[in-house]
Each structure stands twice: as C-alpha cells, then as structure tokens.
Length: 398
Ligand code: BEZ
Image 1 (cartoon, rainbow, N blue to C red):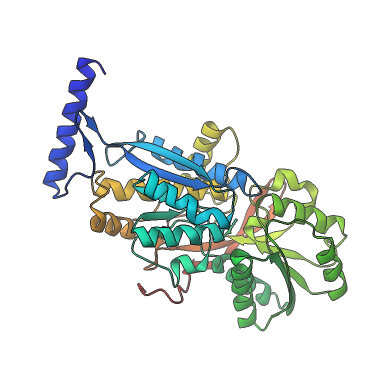
Image 2 (image 1 turned 90 degrees about the vertical axis):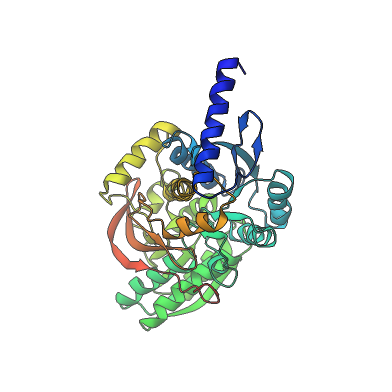
C-alpha cells in the first residue's frame, strides 16, 4: 500500500468508525490500517444437475452488489465460494466449513432443499445469518424458522398450490404426480394436492424416482396405463430438460396435459426445444411481465453474464438486494444483528418478479403467475394466486 492509499484507507476507517459509533454500533472486526471486509459464504451447486441454477444465482447476486459499487453498507466484500454438489450428505460439513473455518459474516445458499436444511441446522446451531436464494424446503420457513434465517425465493408449497387451484378451476379431477423422491418433490406435490383438493380434484398416484436420476421410462409407461386427466410435476435443471423431452417422445404430450411448478421450463427452454411448446406452469416469475425493473435487470444480467436471465438469476439478484438493504441500515455493521434483521424484515424488495415483502416467517409474499411456453419464453398468462403467503405451518414466529 502506498502512503497516499494508506492515509485514504485510514481516513475511511475512521469515518466508518465514527458513523458506527454515531449509530450506536460497535465495530465487528477491525484490522489496523484496513477496513474489515464483509465476508460472504456462497454455498451453491456449481456442478451436477443444478449447476446452471447455482451459476445464475451467483452471478446475479454479484450483479446486485456491483450496482451498489461492490460494497455493503460502505464496506468492501469478500467472497468464499463452495460447490455443494447438491449433495445433502455433505451439506452440514460444507456449511460448517464456511461458518467455523472461514468465519463468514453471512451464509448464502442453496438450491437443493436437502442441502438447504443442513445449512439451516448449522445456521441455527451457530446463530449465523443465512439467506436462502432458491431451495423451497417448506420447513426452512416453517417448523425450523428463526430470526436469522431468510428466504428470497419461494416455498415448495407456493407454486404447487397455485397450479392445483388452476387445474381444479378448469374442472379437472384426476391427476398423477411425478417427481424426485426428496423434500422439494414431496412438498411441491403436497402444495398441488391442497390446491387441487380444494376444488374437488384428487392426485390418484404419486410416481417418484431418486434424485438426481433421469431414467423416466418406467414412469412414462405407468402414466400411459393410468390415463389421468393431467400430470403434475416437479423437476428442475438437467432433470427437467430430460423429463420434458422424454414425455414428448413417449407420445404423451398429445393425450395427457403436463403441468408443473415453473422450474420445469425455466432456464431450460433452449435445451427442451419443441418438446416444451405450449406447456403451462406456475411460478413467481414469467416472461412479459412488463415491469421497468424486470427490463433493466434483464439487460444488466445479459451484459454481465452474456446469457438470458431466468428465475434463478432473479432470486440471486434479490438476495443481493435484501442484503444491500439490511447492511445499509446498519452502515455495514454485521454485528448489529437486531437492527440488521429488523431492516431485512421490513424491506420491500423491488424485484424483477414484481415488488414483494417478507412474511413473519421470512418467506416472500408474492404473486404466482400462470405461464405458457411460447418459443423460448414462459409467457405470462395470468396471476394464478395473488400475494400468496406460505402457510408457515409450525413456525413459532408467526
Ligand atoms: C429445491 O430443492 O427446493 C429446488 C431445487 C431446484 C429448483 C427448485 C427447488
């Protein structure tokens, strides 16, 4: 460091300390001559069937911070990045590495519900601040909810419930549900069942296969034999690409309508091609929302990442926006925990999906859209469920 930059750096530190003192906060970590950085632990899948999802969350998160000068509450940011491989068996060990070894100030992750629940446990045990940028595990904002756990995406119940309502309103009565045999699949199906049953519909069969297997032939044969009025699915990433293609190749596309939580066709359309055309899904994001924030975000993401945004990018971006809002309120002082949490709780996020707030359980209260695939887009059709809040069953903060 030159004399000039050292002096400037000292000045910044002193200004930061004065601001912190004025706001009544004590400094978190302070090294002489250097302002401590806010350390962020990004635990996401960078390999495997959910790799593209993790990558989009990561890049859009960084974009949200870059738009604010790359700082949080005036402090520089340092990233520690860890590939969780969507492997629940390694979830606790990986999260512990970030918390205990790397001593991150904020834990951010992940995509897979099983891995996310391991992170929730580690965050609860260590009282670490955790923001979940995708995984929908109902329990994270249900029985396991806690003041230090936030989610900027959705609960698995939300899109499923909305699709159930849509199908029932169409007078459909007999469905088969297909998914991977893990929390996200079960909970998405349960949400669908609840919405469907409220309108007189019934899921007659649930066909499951282990995550992340993609050998769908036996399931497709069963669907053909069962002849339901529709099939509801939860698949995402590489598995969603394969399922949609196999479903069409089996000739089911013309006889049994396939619907699902919108992950089935988000970020996947280029790879699914003709097989996805016309598919209807429900999600908290859609193409053609006609919101200035969405247009600006899409252009910025395209410029930064050189590819189109999808729902995962939106969620990563909003995770950044939530953290920006929280740390601005405490001037970067992550140890001012009560004030930081209060600021995050009351933030209104101007999201590309539309503005949203967080429920008492820290999950987005948001519109769920019905979308239909047209070309390379999940075109907005209608609002399937307005300002839908997860029921947060079992959450003691509600
Ligand atoms: C989940 O495991 O919760 C999940 C994974 C991918 C997309 C959506 C949800």
